[in-house]
Image (cartoon, rainbow, N blue to C red; front, side, top):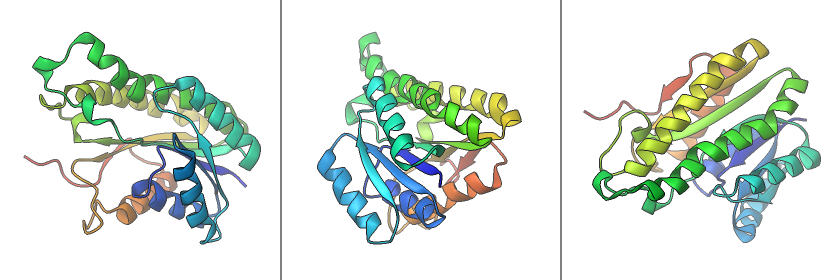
Length: 221
């Protein structure tokens, strides 16, 4: 059995995606900061007969991510699918004219250093399997910078560039890197941007293994 590892586990998209990949037969490794939060999510998945465990790590602490993903692979099996989709902090989204150089440190760690760390942690196992999927979920500022959200605009653009290079470099090894852009809010009543719809879209991206960038909804004008 291989493992679906989710960095940024939460009760919305994270739980829905964990259900979808778990239903397909993968063990589920949930990575987040709060142990109580993780215990609640794993208990809910266990109720659906999905093998799941929680591993504590912080997206602003790359070393903790390396340790969590190594522990997950040991406990549950090699990571075949990695999804990186933690929710950025509100203070990452300051206006560009109010953003200093130091204000970009945490956004860049969150959206670049930590994804690079996670990929490097799981890539050896994917190479041993001979297959793998790397899923990156970002907001619309990844492709259309927003002057009121400078931190995420800069950091998501860096993450996008890194993920795109992975898509090209790893394709010959049967490792597929892809990005899903969710331009607006994730809402339970949204046709294409509900947690369930997005989880299905992520699973389809993993299964079809074609383009790099996908959109949940068209970008607004």
